[in-house]
Image (cartoon, rainbow, N blue to C red; front, top):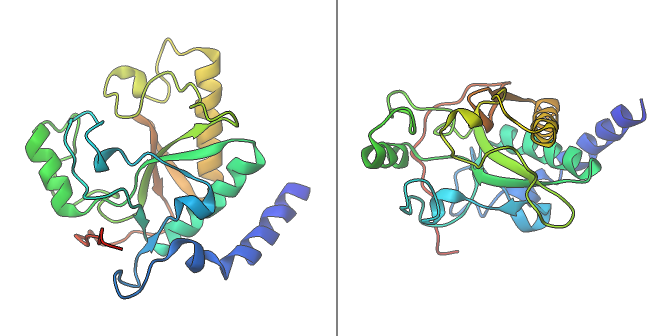
Length: 210
C-alpha cells in the first residue's frame, strides 16, 4: 500500500512539472511532441543512431535528442521514478525515429530481420516506442545477457543460455516498464511500446542548433 500511495502522490506532483522537464521551446517543436531532458531526469543518454557506434556503423540522427509523444514521455517519467526507487538508472538507446530516417536505415541494411521495412511505420516512427536498459549505482550497465541491437537469438527475452543474473535483470527492466504503462516485445529485450494509445506516423525532425 505504501508503494501504491507513493506513486499516486508522485503522479499528482509531477503532472504539472512534466512539460518543464521534458518539453522544448515551442518555437522549435510542435506541441504534440515532448523531449526527454536527460540531465534533469538523471537518465543516461546513449542514443545509438546519433553516432557511428551502432550496428550500421553510420550516423542516422543529426544529434542525440530524444522525443516522444507527451503521454509517452509522462509514462517514461514514471518508469524513471520506479527505477530510482529500485536503485537503478534508465539508459536510453532510441526514442522517436522520423519516418524518413527509418527509410534511410532500411536502405543501408536492406534486411527486415534487422530493420523494419518503412511501410506504414512502426511505433518508433509514432513516438510511442523506446529502447533502453539499466545501469547500477556505480555507473555499470546491468548484464542483460546480450547487447542492444544484437540481432542474434540471445536478444529474445526468453533466450536459452542466459545466466541467472541476466534473467533477473531482464525481469527487472520489464517490471519497471510494464508498471509504467509500456508493453514489452519478446524479440528484443530492450524494446517497449506505449500501450495506452496509438499515434500517427510522423516525419517531424528536430533542430540541433539550440
